[in-house]
Image (cartoon, rainbow, N blue to C red; front, side, top):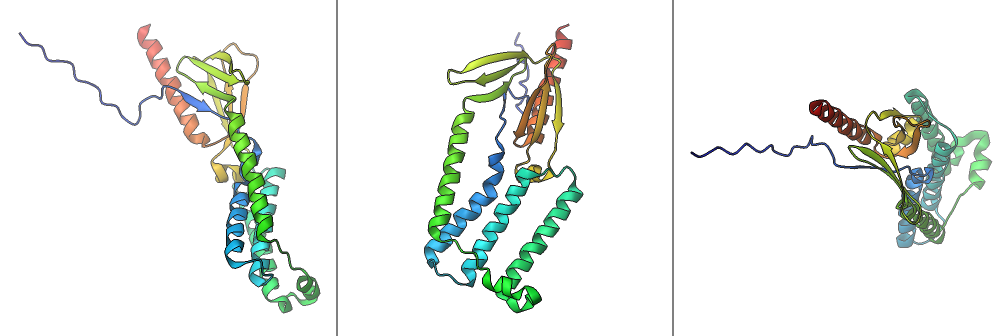
Length: 236
């Protein structure tokens, strides 16, 4: 008598991941808009030359504006969407007025002499060097993160650190997860935030700042821990 083989369960997109890597990045990653602006400006100047005309002044002013906004991200937190909207509005108005008065200094009124004399200019060498320095720092950061990261598994939480791959182990069952979005600006730039992990029987919580795509990581961790709880209940 033949027997019918049991039906195989198809693999779906909701399958619990076997491992999840968690990396805490330094704040310099939020300078990528400035890096891209410098890279683009350097390419444009390389093709058009280093002539000091209105286009060169406008491009340099735009770079300074992006760089200034990136520095503000480093200096202040924007915990609410309203504060971020107000910041973008003020920045757009200031940058728009600055570019307008660069091309139409007669519209500046009593500030005409100031904007007539103000002509920010940076040549292709400056932009290429700036891009090279910041790009080199990014490469070093990525290399350094290979020696300091966290790995979540269904039954344990691992901390890989050190040049010789030192390893710390924490229990994953009953792991508490907290997601914090302290800066809306940083969340918009790289979907980043703070992840707080509290293993059971541990006196201190594990705080990971600047975790990229934190929503995706938090959902994957929750799914992994939920599957582990179901499995333990079934075995009992």
